[in-house]
Image (spheres, helix red, strand yellow):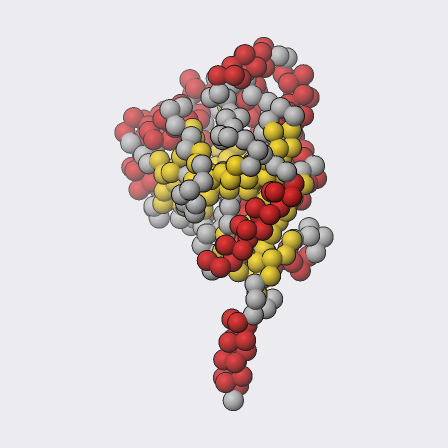
Length: 361
């Protein structure tokens, strides 16, 4: 009898219509349901977590539209969106700013379709220049595609030594050089050492730093799933650092910085080895090196570690522009700005940077 009732209930639920709803950051039950879905959906990533809604709103004052498709009280898909509006860089609706991955994460094709339709309706209502979905897999071959970026991701071997041997010989020699130089890694409870190295590093490259309070918010919202690792030399001086995200069985080194002396000590290579070693010992299965622009030093560095580039499908639905904007340092129109930024005193750059970088996403 109970089995029959359960079967009837499932049939009724399956025939119920899908409803698209908007997540409210203050609705704890809805947030918990969203994150429970993200934790189990194969298509979801760390950047689909509900906490990004708070961060984007509180730190950058971006208007968010975190959509979810629900049938009979059960979530079947999510699509986090934020509007980034700027005089310099235009008006966009994107999933998700400051994220390498985004777009729809759904357990049914119907849920994915209704969420994307709703996203397009919102984009038209807001009058944005374009809608951008940062997909891992292609969903709309007919949409213009930003193919500037690729991702690097591979499995972590279960034994520490196997991971060391999997690193190509020349890069492995750099890791061993760092070990020989007496470097060691430390996990940080706060982000003081991380931010000092990160801000100095991006300044040397001519790009504005994200604000200190953004990183504080990441730690506050995501807790132990957001952790900084800092490499120090034999004198205890900070040489290299990385802020990583942890999601299910993977680690995502995401923001990093190095001192000028790090290259001579091989601290950057040692840093990523230590993160991989620690992740292996934690039982994690994937090391996600994130995205890089093709033809850059970052791209070559990750390939030298034995990672193979995989395509990313940043699909755009254009409304008020004819082509995909190139708001990145590779664009020649920003060359003078980059050189000017490099010469700016770092104190001024750290003060001014957050006003600019919030509009880049």
